[in-house]
Structure formats: structure tokens, C-alpha cells
Image (cartoon, rainbow, N blue to C red; front, top):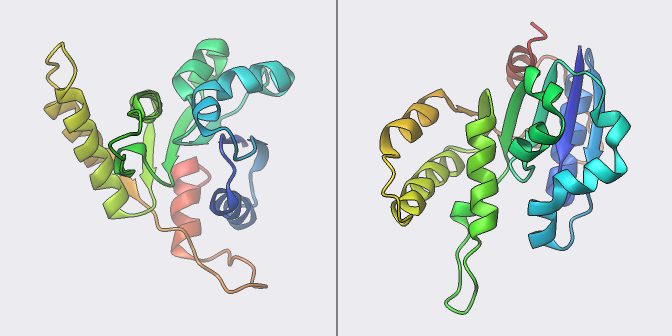
Length: 196
């Protein structure tokens, strides 16, 4: 099985997550594309363009699973590479933009919130690292959509997504340890990826 792992803003915790994941689930063929953790506003909105320009051949290949962090604009990426839409799309929320506090002099991060929301809507499976992260995402998305001028009926679709979402804690290991192949995390990841 070929899995494309996309990390659009590879801060230290994101790198740890990706490396742990690839080490734990070693019976699939991983392809990792990541982008440096700088220029946040550009990175969260521009990652499809960056990868289109730098990784066109890699993204043109076929994968059974696309596993992406919530900072990946997967909806746009699938628009640029339609064949990726046939893969199973898993979005992992290491954090969500609806949970970030905004100061009074800060421009609202509408673009970042929309990327998170579109990623959730484009996914086949949503995975959150904590219950708080899951709940704050859906509660924040509901409040956000109420502010839109169209008065969209968001409650039922969001609740349906919330019921389908999974919570999968990030395994924390002491320095120097390696992931173990028989952890509950490994079994869940393998079943989510379709390995088992």
C-alpha cells in the first residue's frame, strides 16, 4: 500500500508525529512531503502551489491513502491533482485554527480557518489528537459559520462530521525509545489506513 503523508507546516511537534507514525506503521510504503514552519499565512494557504511547483511528479503518482495534517489545503490539492481524490483521504488535526485566541489588534485568521474547514469537508476520515481539539474545532466552526452572511444551516452537517471523527492521542515516548509495533495506536492507525 502506498501512503502519501503531507505536512504543510513541519514544526517540531509535527515532525515528531510524522516520524513516529512512519516508524510505527512500517508495512506500508510512505512518501512524505513537508514544508518548513515559516511564513504561516502563506504556508497554510499556499501549500498546494508550493507542492505543485516543487513536487509535481511525486503528486502525479498514485496512492491508496493520502494522510494530511489539517494545515494542508487538501481541497485545492485534489483540484490540482484530481486522481488524489480517488485515494482515501485522512486529515489529522494536530491542532485547529478555531482554538487559537486572537488579540483585538490581530486580523482574523479567516483563511486559516477556512483551510481547516475545507480539509475536514474534503476528507473521508477525520482524526484529532485530543477530545478538546475535536470539540473546539466543531464548536468553533459552528460559531464561525453563523457569522457568514448566508445564514447557512451548519448544525446538522457539522454534528454528522463530529460523530464520525476519531480521537487518537499522539504516543509520547522517552528520548531514545522507539515505537512499539503492538501499541493500540499502531493497531488503530493500521486499521484507519486499511492495512488490517
